Length: 313
Figure 1 (cartoon, rainbow, N blue to C red):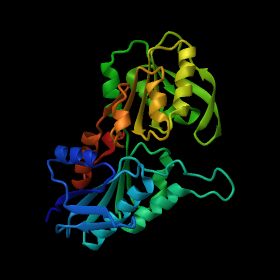
Figure 2 (cartoon, helix red, strand yellow; figure 1 turned 120 degrees about the vertical axis):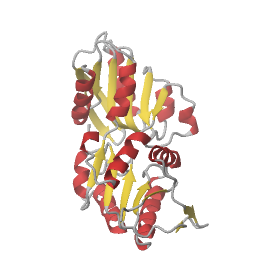
Figure 3 (cartoon, rainbow, N blue to C red; figure 1 turned 45 degrees about the vertical axis):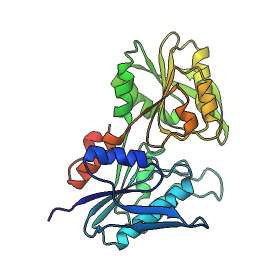
């Protein structure tokens, strides 16, 4: 018999979960996810899910530890309720920046989180724009890794910019920037920088011709915004303009919103992999695009055992 599809979510991003359900023409699963008075998380699945194909939609964004625990407990509850298969849909995978040992006796927390999700009972993972592609190999279960590029590119093409240059904020992001440049038929530039500490960097040089050209800085996430602002200022000093920035994950911690609102960027384009707070919603430079349709199509194909490779662009 064909398996029924059911979608559940925690408290990380209920609006994105509702968007995915709308595109799939499915209702959100009936579950209670709340805290006890001491902060412990309680989950109750209030419907029969025996033999169902389950998708748990939960980013591990801020507060990261709470949202991660919600995901783990949800998966465990669904497993014990005899779900046929459980797919953890994690649009933003937290702890992804701790993907290797950068100092003696340092943890590889991305691997630890991958193990936790697997042991909790997830059978596969669907994520988007992982900070490092090798994180897919940290899981011992299948991982479908989507990119928000189609959504971002659709918006950028509507701007009808001429002689545009796509800019990588560092050497590690060149592959992502090159993919954008290819699809926009644009030039490519790289910001060479030296990182002096966590969330601290110093721009050294711009590799490529940006003088008098529209520039689009492409990254996977914006955290405090310090690195991005230095890159935008360097592009402005080099004669680029107008300047845009786009990133999949709007982490926006610390002074990020204040920095972005005062930046030289015309627009900062992000997705709804992480919900924006009230302060960010009040910044007219920030444009948030939905990845609900993209994720819903991936979920539909996974459920129907169809190829999702055409979505990996």
